[in-house]
Image 1: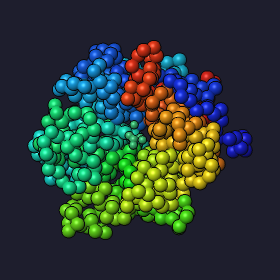
Image 2 (image 1 turned 90 degrees about the vertical axis):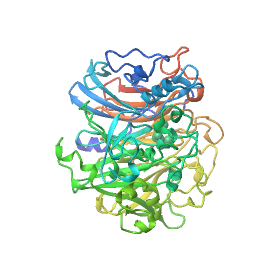
Image 3 (image 1 turned 60 degrees about the vertical axis):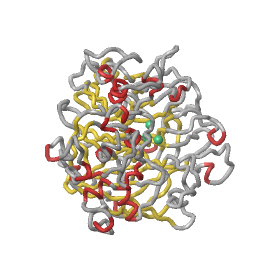
Image 4 (image 1 turned 180 degrees about the vertical axis):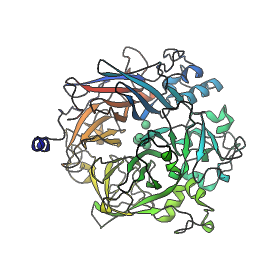
Length: 579
Ligand code: FEO
Ligand code: CA
Ligand code: CA
Ligand code: CA
């Protein structure tokens, strides 16, 4: 049996073609169904979805634009799904498309953000959402949270409303996620800057610009109706965002904790692994052109099981940032983790870092001082389940080769990179706590139909039947299949011709083979994945179908407005997904 298992190919499903249809397509023998969608009721007193739902209703319903998610078993047929609700699309949230905002509209938008916790129940072998689950919970842009770790109580985190600098309200732009072995959920704050603005002339810390903070917001208009978001009045409020937040999903009364030891930047996900010496290691991407990849290593060891000793493990440890090196012309090399520790390597008061809190609050500035490598937008990191190896999607970067701080290098080798690549590293001695590693590029996405040769054609494992651009979500299953999701250009034209809608693929890390597994509806991004413990149900997120009024009616069909949704994917024969 062992011999047979060893020779069985890792990828056992039939590839699906690229698609521009307003539909989910999965391989023959697979089924994709909607588990839950934006606006679905999470409590017995919540109304059914309607575009006219108000803020109060939205706060009792599944949030919008679901992204990263994790599955928490509660029993053989009962579980809890924690799901990020990254942002909302005003063109669908409001009947007038958000043209005229008021306080009620902003409150509804705030309620559409955050995290949704929904109980699942398995009936007739299929996991379904339980709208009456006792652990169902909504966390929104106004839910009270504790700031903990080295920056908690720091002068830079204090505001009029919170003179202690220890209590923040809410979380938003929760992109991707992580899960700890002690049963908590990690939700990562990404583009927090876009929610702050001012009609006045804010006076900001000079380092705020690195985070994109400015008087002009991203169009959400919150500062006009909720003073907290007005930078002229509360210039330090944004310092309380851009963190990784830890949530105890099994205690609906618990207060989420912002773990400042993991640094403040535009967090993508938090790829958690227990190192062989027992310490927690969390790999973190900072998704912006020319930003960095980070690693947190806990001071203390993980105590196996759901032990109270683990509860504040993420408050103490060391944050590092990566430097990638390569010989001229090589797409592989060596690298180092550089510690963001106050007092070391120039992270001193003279250089603008009064203490460790300031190093963490302005982690990007600290990383630059250490000589970290600027990357092509680091999105998710995934750690291989059996080998000491981690993978990170570098989604694309139109600035590569154009901006002085973003020269071409081995890890980011293409000018104005439209396609993205996946980098991987192997820590020295198989030790995720080691300060050095070897790296290579697992793949370069590209278009061999448009580019006959050169790096824009993609790496050797990319061909006309598996082309895609902008890898973003990634995750491993237990067998070591690497699942890849895309958030790319879905025009299907010019340099993206033949790629179709955003999609999900599956790769064999050993052979390098990449096979398309799923295609999404019009103008969506595919993002968020988690499995049931038996690996026979895969949950996948469909985010912003029909964005910017593209003609999608997913998932309800007819003339309905499109809704982000979580899919449940199973095999007709009940087998393991992907095998
Ligand atoms: Fe929310 Fe970097 O994606
Ligand atoms: Ca993403
Ligand atoms: Ca993305
Ligand atoms: Ca997204």
